Image (cartoon, rainbow, N blue to C red; front, side, top):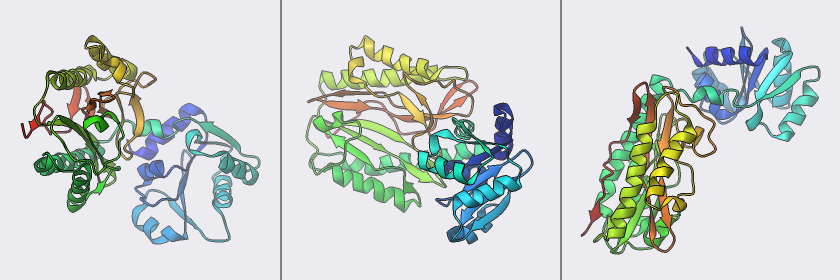
Length: 357
């Protein structure tokens, strides 16, 4: 079933006779459009794509599944949206509650008098959680870039190299592959590796440092997100203990992923493992998040998750332990929910590794 058909089914369930999609990611999912500003109005039988004159040519090339309406000054988006909604006979217009500001809603109300504007949570977001095969293939391609990148930068895992040296090399390599960097590279070492989203610095790698690298690639609009932690120099018993506990937690969580599982229960599996090692108090974030057109996409594996896993969903699985003054370990893979369990998309090894020892 195509995205437009899936959205129309959801509209029927929600008892709205039209939907207004304004979030750029969701517009792209529906139409293939890659520009930054556009909206789509959908009814059971019609659909209109609305953008401005900056994207006239691009819209012609990318949008072929619906009528294209290009606005030009002095007309504004609210005015054109109102015109098209009335032309389509929309009386109950559902909009994306989490993506619309109060100011936007106020302007729509003024222009759309007589139209019942209905806020709907996850109007299109929820549908994007279950990926098409072609979407999963693009995520796999992005994972292939991160795998190759890790192999490339391994030569830098040595005393005296700075965190910035490694972060810059990661970004350079990804761009040389024709991809883009999915997010700012995280490269932190020693005590700084206890910062889950630490910013790379000019700190040099030293013996006894954990080095945590978290990076991703974007290929054809789809992202990967991988984290690996390694040791520089000779490991201590504590290094091995912490690392192996995190790895055990990650593997147990991946084993628990299957259709019908609750996101919060998968998160609990990882926390229970860390609790057995008396390390759960050092794990403060969620186990994972949805992945796809966005790095932090719809859906989560966390204590607050309300998601029930379905075949075709893609998540990161990334437990971590962060001990102030000592360092941190995070291990992250991207996985697809399959009928028989989880398929891991990354190929980079995650056994305990010490460099220069």
